Image (tube, rainbow, N blue to C red; front, side, top):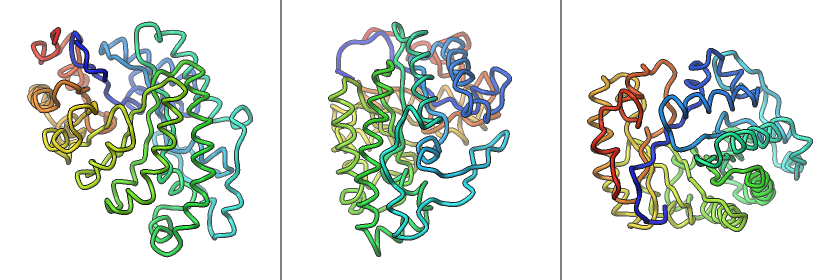
Length: 332
């Protein structure tokens, strides 16, 4: 990230459900039991010689702290029983929450602390918070969120002002627990126009990222999907790392954001990683490294899908079974 020499490109695939299965647990175990998350992360970090342990798990931690209720299936993400913001009057329900009294945010902080204690001297530890638009969509519903940005943008702004302050406190708590980097997931922002991103999302993300930097951590912005029309504005948030999903060519993204932002990505997690052969994964990863430039981190464009064959993962990781050893050698 600093542009200094390095021994090899960092490799940081996003593991959630796959990691749970790797240790014989369900995805529900992974996101509802902080110790299972830590165990699973340590297992994949060790098995594939990765450079970062991650607290990313599911999108509902903060939403639960606001009072949303969920059903949690064994092998899938939680399902909201109802959205929290059903009318403009419900904006009053968006209030500051006490992290210590909010079970699921507190659990993530504890998971970060345990990972930092276990591997923080040798590995990056990634905390995680939802981005402002994503969290508003969680609380409001995606379709209603889109309509609000058109018909009642002040409703969104009123909620986002409180949301972002909560997210700042949540990020700072994870940094205090040992996270050296905070990932911010704002995936739904890939579905709005560049002008709307610039107007409604960028200012709030920048406020969050500035606070994370002030607390001493780096920022990784994850907006999966086709972001090619907005990527130039995403680089203006001040993020240190910008995840680029498979729809956006890395060389195109590099041209747009310039040389000083670290890109992470970006081969297709389904068509290549899940459905391809180990050699196809390796060939695509090799191309990514060549296009990503000096400041580049190798990973699929989004989460490693459940059911991915282990040899396909090993093909691009610096471990036994790696098929790109020449690209994962240095220094450079």
